[in-house]
Length: 328
Ligand code: ADP
Ligand code: MG
Image 1 (tube, helix red, strand yellow):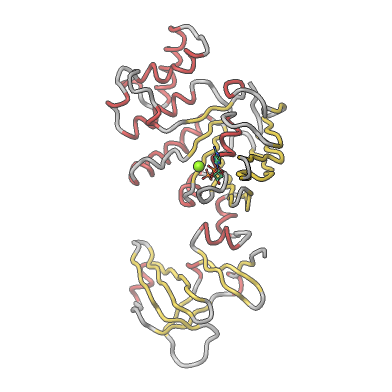
Image 2 (cartoon, protein in one colour; image 1 turned 120 degrees about the horizontal axis):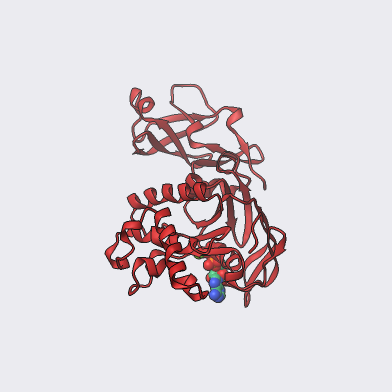
């Protein structure tokens, strides 16, 4: 089976009239944690399913290492899909669930159970091999789902919204575990999510998608600090998109300076329309005639040293170096 960099070349998926994935090009270096990020319907799952071989390709190619895998059956690609934990077979114990794909491949029982035990050790589930899925917690089931995907020794693991069924606390814990597994295994993970927070926490590379296209690809810091377009700035959050002269620009909420109006005629004024305490920061919503609604965030200590109130008239400004120009 192939291993190496994954390359999508002009990859296209059409369902009848719908173009779900529109001629995307992407290279994912081997061993990368890559997140496909975007709103519902933008083509993330279709892209992932084409890489897995669960969906036919309408146009273009999928190349893994030296060879095109575009038309290979799923099991011959060197990829594996991690399915949601509720896709475990309820009547099979954990060890047999993990060994299942090797059974389908005709691997002898002793050998496949030995391999299953190795995978269970990898995800710290050795002591639960004899249990049924229903006898495990949500997080434990998730680890079994991971072991089940890893048993085929893939060079790319594909995960479609793997954390979305978990409660918020478990989601953050499992997120850290996924990252640790990827680091330890050293293989490529391609993880679909609509959560920018999840993508920023996990990814080496974030691929922001909208309308069947790639809008921007980069490290989390690149995508957050230098959003290429208004869509990326708004989707990543934490930015204000405003007009500056004849340009569309983004300014991070934590770079917006707010001061009580005290005579003078500042270029930008606003009224404070919302104040949200968020722990380490306090986030203020500002109603501005010129710019519409703006967001400014202050460190908690800074805010309470000189607090604002709803309705306060304020001046709004930012340093020229904090203005980031967006592509039209
Ligand atoms: P995402 O995972 O980003 O939410 P999808 O890849 O599931 O997006 O869907 C992209 C587009 O393709 C959507 O408009 C969706 O309705 C459409 N689509 C997805 N799967 C099918 C299908 N099996 N048949 C027809 N249209 C589909
Ligand atoms: Mg999807």
